[in-house]
Image 1 (cartoon, rainbow, N blue to C red):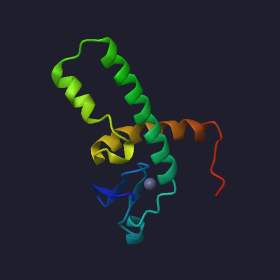
Image 2: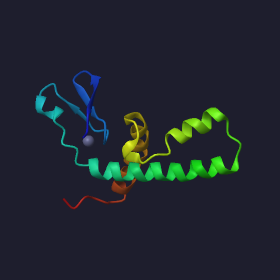
Image 3: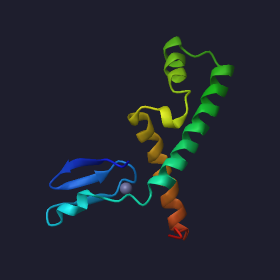
Length: 110
Ligand SMILES: [Zn+2]
């Protein structure tokens, strides 16, 4: 479920798609129905899977500090089980991928 983060001056940002809504004249805008939640979450999960593959490969080939290896292992779990802050960093890439697709004319059917 998309949460709205307060930015100040009646501006709220969707935690999923990054869209900013203003509630100064439209209090209902806070109930942003995130149309991109499913695609953002799917792509963010892919971003996380790619990171797991990359980090496990690096960990198998290079001597990492114990601290870094333990930190990475902590995140070698399914996307759905990640803490919200980690999901947020994967969503940044998902939103960028969607922006590229939209720039090239891809749109949703619904
Ligand atoms: Zn949204």
